[in-house]
Length: 307
Image 1 (cartoon, rainbow, N blue to C red):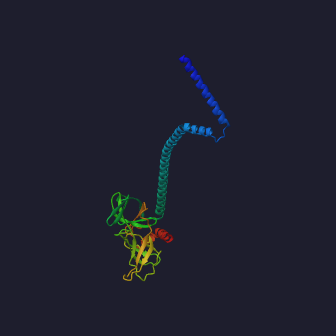
Image 2 (cartoon, helix red, strand yellow):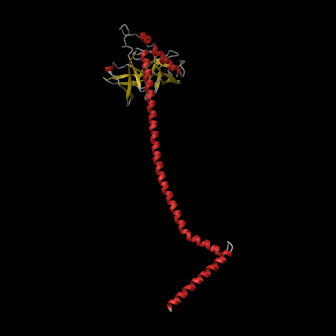
Image 3 (cartoon, rainbow, N blue to C red):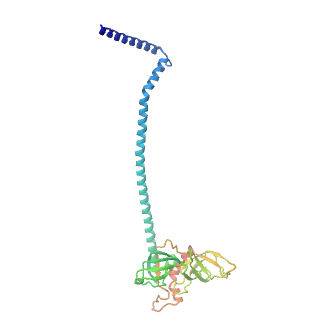
């Protein structure tokens, strides 16, 4: 009996649910889209799908974050690779420029040697020694190459300095802008003579030119040939500034050096005018020096005028 009652109740319940469902469906079909059942259906769907959409959004965010991390790592690696390539390219360009500059310097030196018998040898600057009194330059030629103290040292641009001391395989050169350096000089345009001295700040000054002188900025200053070290007519530089001090008998003249001491790599060591023999084997006089150095002097003076 109890089993039959339970079965009857179950049938009745199913029939009731079916009737209610049919009734709701009929109402839903007849109801407009803005009706209660339609709104209820939409709300129920949103509630049911909200957890899934949240999970999907979270997954998408994590996926995008991971892709961003991997992409950033790839970009960093690519950037590092490009930086290294750029650094190597710059190094190659600099090495090529240095090699080109060195070849041009050597070619110029060889051309000068062909045209001048006064040149003893070429030397490379291998060290720069900074002392309290100023800079000294070490070159890779010494007494074994015929180098002696006080031999003039020049470049294709003009006077660099002179040999301060000579060892067997290397020598010390004192530059013309050193405070202990003094070179007998003259102004090419006026033939006025003076002394070019170096200074602690590395500048050149032309001394003993009287205030009534007609020298002007841009005039060329060359060696005078006096003093027994430098041949006559080698370019020292051009007049850079002139100051007229009423309390002084002489003008204060700064000379811009023809040589760039910072970029010079190779120099020319010349035979000393007082020791360089003539073809007859006799030592030369100042006049003889002037005649023998005409070719080199003209080249360097012309270079100074053009500058």
